Length: 108
Image 1 (spheres, helix red, strand yellow):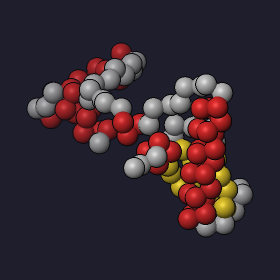
Image 2 (tube, helix red, strand yellow; image 1 turned 90 degrees about the vertical axis):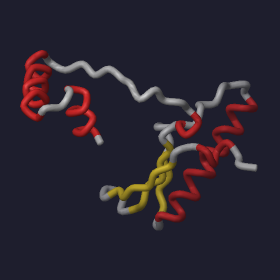
Image 3 (cartoon, one colour; image 1 turned 120 degrees about the vertical axis):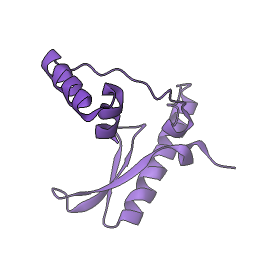
């Protein structure tokens, strides 16, 4: 059976400042783990998240829902300056597509 900490969203990156790999977890943005190899950074952040979840359970705190388990509608609102809205509407009209299609293509 998959454990909750295995369902979270992990990412690895390089820290030029630290000269090490960094393990991160999207659901716990304040946590990170530095290591000499990407494999050790991933193992470290996973272990750290598991420990934090255990502490949260012990303290009766609610745990963040993994992003992978959330449902998304595919809709979200973005506010832009009126000039940007106008410019995008013109580009969409000139391209013969809806504003929604134009913006979706830019995001994807």
